[in-house]
Image (cartoon, rainbow, N blue to C red):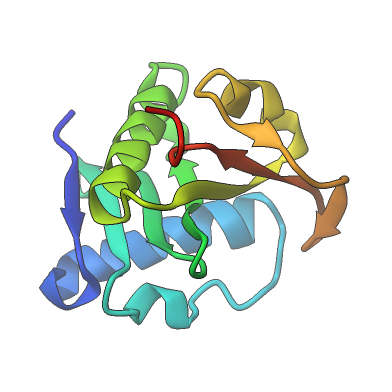
Length: 151
């Protein structure tokens, strides 16, 4: 699986369409969350779109971005239905962590995790730092991966 990591302006129209369709298919249709899937984070100058394509479809995707002065963030993490159960999610999260560390080495990494995935994210070193909350009808918790002060 070959990951690509690109800024919005580097994505060609076909790839951008494939990414957006894949995100809507998972987050809006599959998870039944009618919300504005596309936002200004997608087009922010420093946002990195991390993805793999296969058979003309989005296989995996995550976006890495500047959340604020303290944190970088990983969001919109997905593995297409046809690619699930093959270890791609772990590979994707490892690559997303690498991307954040390369782009923003001085910032800890934030993720708003769906609660059923808390143990999965803990396996990468993420720790809970909020109480459970509901976002778009799905329970979440905020998690942080400490990057700063760990050397």
